[in-house]
Length: 220
Ligand SMILES: C[S@@+](CC[C@H](N)C(=O)[O-])C[C@H]1O[C@@H](n2cnc3c(N)ncnc32)[C@H](O)[C@@H]1O
Image: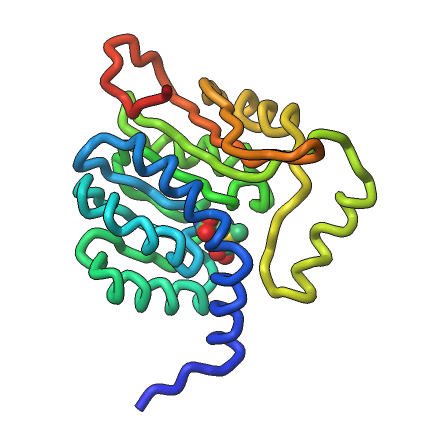
């Protein structure tokens, strides 16, 4: 009988409590824009809880998803989540860093709360963009802070020591836009999904090439 260490189970449980509740709506917003039968690269799939909660959309759209993550605890939980949601045939969790992954071509790639926690977001955008179809789309959802705060910039990374969850760096719109510009990928849309005076949750859509015939994913 295999025993899963208690710490691994607790990490996955905590992650689902603190992250998946928020990111489920983000996944739903992105998945609903994908064309039927799309091949999607999910960068930083985590425990897969948010994706599993959108199982209806994954099935209805017949999506084919490769989910990358570098955390073995999260991926173990992700495999179980996919089996419980009866998504194992459509979702393949892969233990790999985004920088090492080579696959596709993908119709879309998605960074849900994962882009700006990477050590080199520019390289990640460029590497993933090179694996998209010519009319493919790159999506990202995450929190943006409206005013620069040195205190928050110092405090946010420390949350990891308490929760074991990496929430990444505090992100401002101009830094985010610059990452796409430096990667040579056109940011077409930056929509606010919800927000407060200080911060907002936003959905970004980018493309690698001209899609003048409009065959790409919907960017309403
Ligand atoms: C905040 S979580 C978001 C998880 C999930 N996408 C969601 O929105 O619910 C970020 C995830 O990115 C993963 N990650 C960090 N660095 C990575 C890398 N280099 N390649 C792939 N995944 C990475 C982390 O292990 C973590 O599971």
